[in-house]
Amino acid sequence: MRYQTRGTCSTAIDLEIENDIITHCQFTNGCRGNTQGLAKMVEGQNAKDVMNRLRGIQCRGNTSCPDQLSRAIEQYYQQHAE
Image 1 (tube, rainbow, N blue to C red):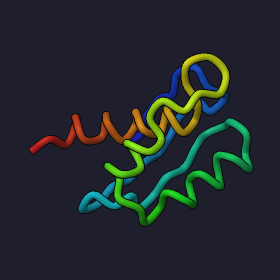
Image 2 (image 1 turned 90 degrees about the vertical axis):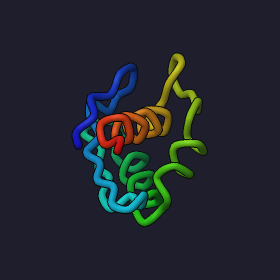
Image 3 (image 1 turned 180 degrees about the horizontal axis):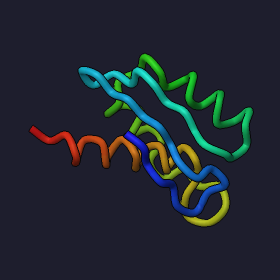
Image 4 (image 1 turned 60 degrees about the vertical axis):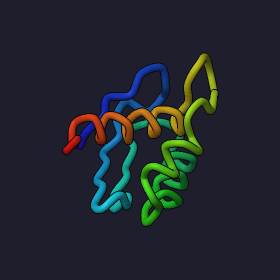
């Protein structure tokens, strides 16, 4: 799934989740070291846990790349509701 970010230097997040585990996460643009590090840290983790941990983290304004990732995960679950 591709999520278009809002309010951050990164412009999109590519995200794959299988059986509630994040199997792929990649940011487009943004602070390269931070976004690559964040992506590697969340791969293999429970998506709902990551979503809850990262929600509300602020950088500039009222959001951040971690917060946008939490919103991407939330959108994923909304789109894949059973």
